[in-house]
Structure formats: structure tokens, C-alpha cells
Amino acid sequence: MKADDAYISIYKAIGVNAARLRSQQNRSQTFVAERAGIDRSALNRFESGKYNPSIEWLCKLADGLGVPVVEFFSGLEVAAPGDIARAGACGTAKRE
Image (tube, rainbow, N blue to C red; front, top):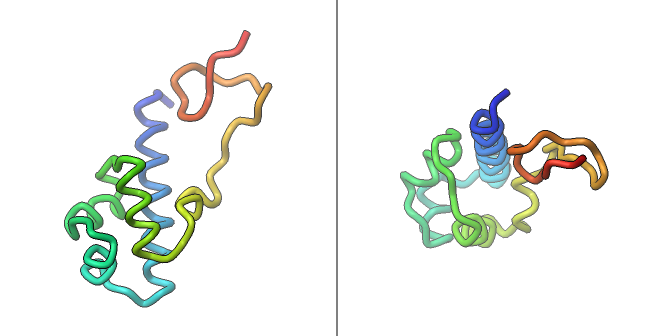
């Protein structure tokens, strides 16, 4: 998997988590977007894995959902410190 593919997978995974959190609250995209102060179409693209949000945008969305921002990353696997990791993977660094 290329680094770009890894990033795309992460965007999709956090978008799916956000959609799940929103659905669990029985909230529409419009409601959450208005509450968070973000664009509804951006939320739709994010939940579909087609939008790479800023940290600020994720924080606004988390506030709109009433959840900690780390909830979007629930279930993602990350390399532990000291693990061998390939360069270019999100949250990892090349180690020798």
C-alpha cells in the first residue's frame, strides 16, 4: 500500500466513525453541520472519505456531536513507539 493509499484509508475510517456517531444520535447531517458551524456538503464528503479535514474542522465537528475528537479515531491501528514502520505512513516515522 502506498502512503497516499494509507492516508485515504484513514480519511475513510474516521469519516465512517463520524457517520456512526452521528447516526447513533439520530441526527441529520444538516443538524450536525449547523450545530458545529461547518458546511453540510463538507460533512457529507468527510463521511464518504472524500474530504481531508483540518484539525480545527474535526474539533468543530466533535463539538457539534458532543464527543471528544479522539472518538473519530476509534478502532484505528497505529504503530507503537519503537515498532518498525515504513516511511510515509500516517503517525509513523522511518526507524533504523
